[in-house]
Each structure stands twice: as structure tokens, then as C-alpha cells.
Amino acid sequence: MQLTVLGCYGPYPPAGGACSGYLLEESGYRLLIDCGNGVLSRLQQHLPLVKLDGVLISHLHSDHVSDLMVMRYGLEAALSRGERSAPLPLYAPPEPAAEYRRLPYKNAYQVEPLQAGRSLQLGPFNITFQETVHALPCLAMRLESRDAVLVYSADTEYYPELADLARGADLFLCEANYQNEDMAQNPPNHLSSAQAAQIAAAAGVKRLLLTHLHPERERERSLEQARVIFPEVAVAREGAQYQVGP
Ligand SMILES: [Zn+2]
Image: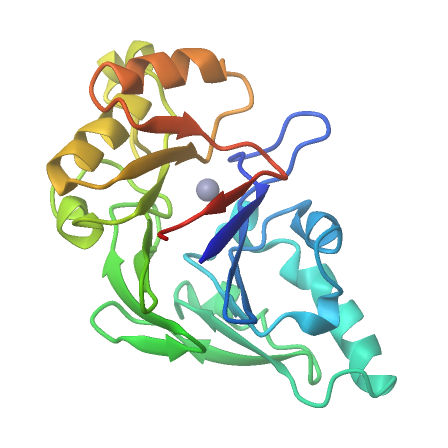
């Protein structure tokens, strides 16, 4: 299983950066997880748009979906040129309904609702979901292939059950929007890097990759605050590729 980080910032990117987007590949199947602003451009540095096999969306906040509104034009053009023969499967939580209704566009996407408790088989990936604690319905996900497990936290504040979903993962891709200095105010909706590390330790994951970085917070500080709790940690880098499992 190979992970390519296309965008790792939230809720907005710094100059030259992109919001959430991750390309996951295994056995020739190419899955895009989240599609925030800047992701479509980055994706095409790795593969032609027509080669994408599916899209999974964790939740309908703009930093996770906004490039879907542009990708649809490219997909439509590919259909009309005969380079694609079917809509691209797109899975997303169906709430808020007004945001969900914005997703379908001509024949670009085949939109399917996602729910926690329902599992999904996409190519080589068996995927299970867990509702997170966020401002709107949001799903963390566990993606298992024959010999590797990746767990993605999506956006969430701290809740202990996330460690159950992440149990024993080869790679835990976890949001870390805050730093220790922010936590005195009990800020909502997101984790600090130290909280991500606590969950990684409780879950016994092999590696932790911090993501959903805030553009105004120093990444080295996020890394240091996590490393004292969980040593096998790195901060996501846009364009970097990570081998997951053997
Ligand atoms: Zn976000």
C-alpha cells in the first residue's frame, strides 16, 4: 500500500500549500481520500485524472471537498472524449444535506452515502468507518488490504474510541491542528499533536503521521510535542510518498 500526501493543511493552506488530500494505491487501484483546495493540481502530478478509481470523503467541510467542484469539469471532459466510460464512484457522508446535494454534476460522479457501521470494499481495500467528534458529521476510516492497515482520523477532537479504530495500524494518519499552547482554552473540533500521539500510543500503531496542519503553527513544534509521547512520529510533507506495511 502506498500513500502520497497531496495536501496536508487545514482549515486553509499557506502559500503554495494545499488542504486535505491523500492518494492511496495498491494493486493498481487508485483511491483519493478527501479533495480539498489545491488537491486536483497535485493529484495530476502523480497520475492522469482519468486513472482515478474512486474517491472517499471524510466530511463535507470545504477544506476536504472544494476541489470536487472543479474536478467534475475534468471528469466530464474525459467522458465526452471517451477517455472515461463511467462516472467516478464518490462516497461521502450525506449530511449536511444541502452540501451533499451539491456533489452530483452531470455524469462526473456516482455519489453514494457513507455511514459509520457500514463497511465498504473498494478494489483491494476493505474499509470501516467511525463517527468522529467534529462540527458536522465526519468519519474516521480504517483501510485494510491483504497485508497492510492505514487508519485516517479525518477531523476530530479527542475521543478515546479512536484508538479502537486505529488498533495496530501500520500507519496512523492523524490530524494535529493544535499544539499544547492552544489547549488551555479547550478548543473544539480538532486534536493537538500530543493528543494524536496519545491515541497512537493507546492504539499500538507502528507509525504516526501528523497531518491537517495549521498554516500558522510551526511544524517542528508539533513534531516535538508528539515525539515525547510517541517516538515513531513524522509530520506529513506534501508530495511525499509513504510505504504502508511490507
Ligand atoms: Zn478540515
